[in-house]
Image (cartoon, rainbow, N blue to C red; front, top):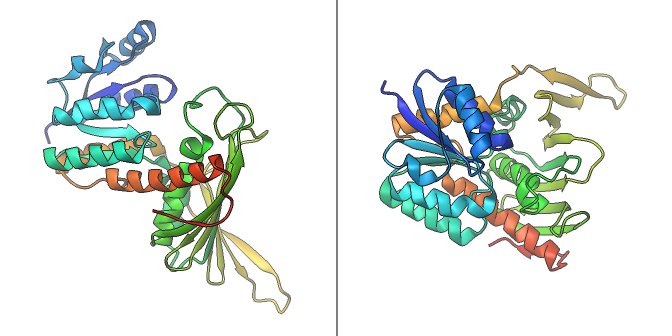
Length: 316
């Protein structure tokens, strides 16, 4: 199969890993990496034996696909440049800063026949995929995501930075559209929301409680799913999963058993899936439409918190 010519735009903390993963794929030709920091991009290009650029337009005509790993406020502008040049894009979450921008990119990509994959990496986590394959009709979910404060990614609220991962997963697990949501939260260190919680009621009756904090003293990424008499636990950090159910003893014991998972490099899996979609012309696991869906719910939640609306409101 013909090699896919790829570039990476933005090689900060996460973009550097994108570039390294592409460089290790035999069916990819990593044409170059782009960053406004000349020193940073030159050092990385030398390390992984590719070319360094400081302007995305320097990749025009050289690549079939790109990863866009820049601050959220720049997603729309850069993604549109490449889609207009018929270049497929893997864009980090959230897809864009606004729903209107997402709609514009999705419409343009459909017109140009271009693939958009959004970087909701937890969809590739084995602790998530194994539970998803086992659940039938979840009634309740609880997702908790917390991290110590870091200056990285503070250009957006914690809802768009961290919670959006879990919003994407619980919507996928529920298999139903969100009907209404209630939310609360607050700014703590930044001038944006740093800690938040939301309750989502889905059209099929499933309920999900989702919390996120970037001012925690510990790192935690967990999801619990109640499905009938079973309670599933996914630990995103360890990539371990378990199932708990009532034991056979007459006493009301609850017995947990591990679910076998194989530890995976989720970013490598995400990038391989993107390359495969480009090669085969197939819809990616997390398309632009699904990225837009997560953004819409996150936007509603963040808006309610900012406006201090704590009651339930319909999800557009």
